[in-house]
Image 1: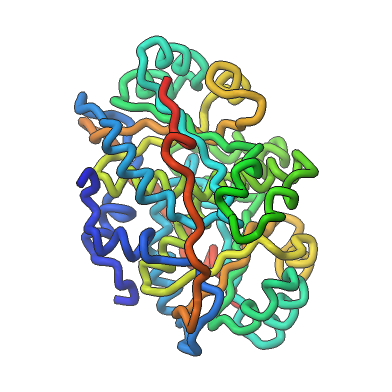
Image 2: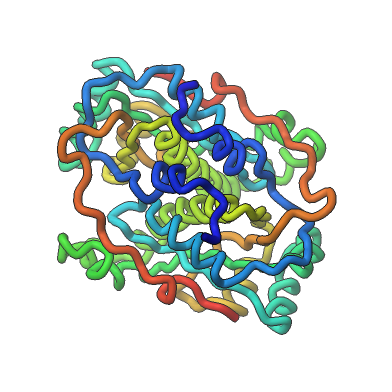
Length: 196
Length: 196
């Protein structure tokens, strides 16, 4: 009642959407990924940093290399999903700030000094964008299967460079049979929200 | 065309939604916050960790203490917003895992050892939830003004404890006059997405 978002959209994005562990064979097209990006790129980040980078693992050879660095329990679904995306944070995001934050020419220099400062900011803001991306996958009528269980150094070595930190690996597709586990309980609002 | 989410909902959540810097006087009620939480609590986190905690700053005394630890440029809007929320990560989230992940009784022990490991996981997953929260604010027809510019140690000392790390401070309300800056450019998909 307090929400203005249409209940169908609430269901699509949050209430009925579930993390998928099995998928149908239906491919996920580049057009779908483009449509997802073109929507979620508008999600806010600090100073419009936009540090999220997306690696689509499409070739059989690359998929095999990725499966090898996933945690054992994540291997079969990572091997079988129609599309797998590696989400990473670009720790050199400040190089793009002249394009992304043009009204403040000093923006790049704010982050030009400490790599540690950049990494922290990139991790926070790329994580926000990872969540927008998951929402976007659902907005496309697809299911996401985000995974944290992988050898981060292995993913970085195989697919990224020293300037990119892997955040998560996401299986994407239409949910298959028994795609989701029963939903686990959430915290009550009293456990999460305090008022001062 | 590739998205199934209604275009009105796309606009509400991403395309027309903007980070607000001014707000009307209309209050944001506890019922609205509850409705936002009851929707976005379903957003996925790793092992259902759900480490986000929300501190609503409602009293004049608390608002004053918060404004004092915000970056100077963020002070006037933090003082004026109808509601301000401090979003933090609970680094002891594993204590709740018996409730949150009941089908795997060993979940709590996975995170029981290293505080550093917990902090990293809490930062990632609470950041995902912070993004869901921003989307939820927009789903309520409100505008969010998320801010990273504050004295983190000060926010922690004034409002949290040693087990909670502040992630961001969010102004919430109906957008006022000249609420948003002109939208900054986003990266082209070619700058973000690579295929292997």
